[in-house]
Image 1 (spheres, rainbow, N blue to C red):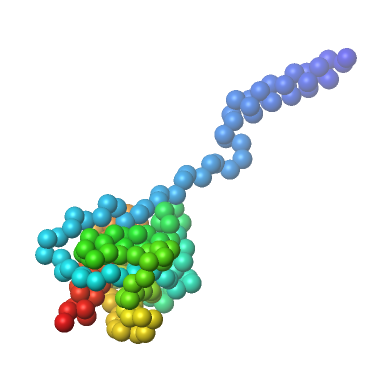
Image 2: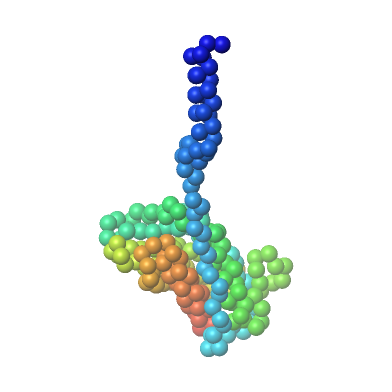
Length: 207
């Protein structure tokens, strides 16, 4: 073996060892996990909440196709409100409609001693509530000021026939201009919206 070849092999071994020691410095840096949000714990039942007095079936909340995702959406109203944007490093733990479904049904059950049925229950209820989510986003009015915007339509059916229908819009200011602030405001907006649905349903059923 020549001295030159020996030196090359020794240097090659040193280089390989250095690369192994460097480890994570080779190739792209690992990406951090995205932050995931839900709507937090449900609020305590209010003693003044209106009561429903007949069984009701509460369908899963439906959503427009572009909202059927766990992406957290925001809009820059001061630039182009018609362009929805997505937080790159934050998401919902599940599509918002799924998060709202369980919360709505639980709140309705607390307000209705007569009973609340889900879509998979075999029992019959003459009254059915359907909710369609039409918007859930964080709207920035300025770079530092934003609100959680929730828009939905509620429909009451009696024996499969339209009984009542109403559209709702709820806006809640976000405490911070980021995904965490938007998620917290969306949770408040969701609970406020569910309260409005319960009140509207109770008023419609009142003799």
